[in-house]
Length: 386
Image (tube, rainbow, N blue to C red; front, side):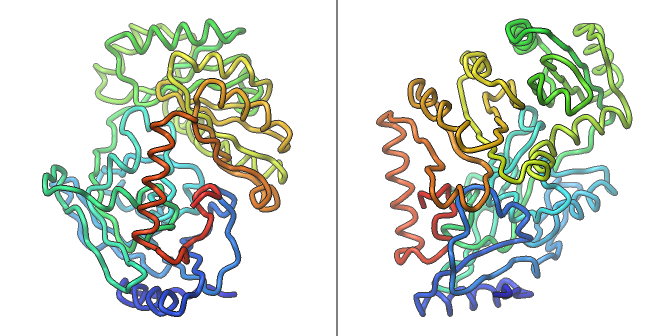
């Protein structure tokens, strides 16, 4: 069915209330760029899109804050901010197709996570529509807010299962004066991890530290295990990195930009080539990253300073050994992307068996019940569990 595309937050809230009051199942989308992400889109009685909400509501460049509607295309917003030499410090995949609301609802991030965090660190407020037809504003438009509990944080990464984000307030950052990438290549994993550890123990603070497996590096025109370090700042800062790292290869200008765009968009490129492919995301402590990567024979990209690894598999059979090892080590593992037929018939989220994880998931279900007691909104979208 064609989606309903309201042009205002009030109209969206009214549409949500009308569907909810009639106990109709509701699917919520932005530009639907990540339809293969997380849980499957189950059959719904109504589809509501935020794509009609695309205005800049308030922009204070001197205060480094902006408020935008959720349907604003992410790339369009970044282009506008770049004109003022500013940015939202997020670099998610599917950047050309995504809406800003979709980025936040899926808590998508990229290599810059090392330097700036995720959407939870950059969102300072939002407005969302509930199934009762109310528009709720939370947080504010100031970088430091001590007003109390920020309910908006619950919606970051909720995949639209609680309410519908209609606008978001962001903390902005200045575009870096310069960036430079330092590349290290290693024939074996242990040497790459040792180099990563030495950088983390140093005074340097790169904005990105990614470790790319040999199979993934080949897609980038590289060989072996590739440790990519990106620095930003003044000329003096960049020169400090050059002296301290003494990397065998340095990339600047278009080469620097191109490499990180390839790394950022590795997932969409893989899914375009592998129609039956599966992207598995596993989170490990930094000290256990090597233990995971020793099990990976194909392509993988790791946020090597955050402990997040994306593993690219050609079929579902490749998932099963990782499910087992994740359970043994207490790692969190989810199917980040997969075809619809696989997501509707398989487990997508392997929760650690620790009491803390069980308690956290129990609380998530209680929050879902509070927002959506009839389970109408984006059913199953949160990795098939909520």
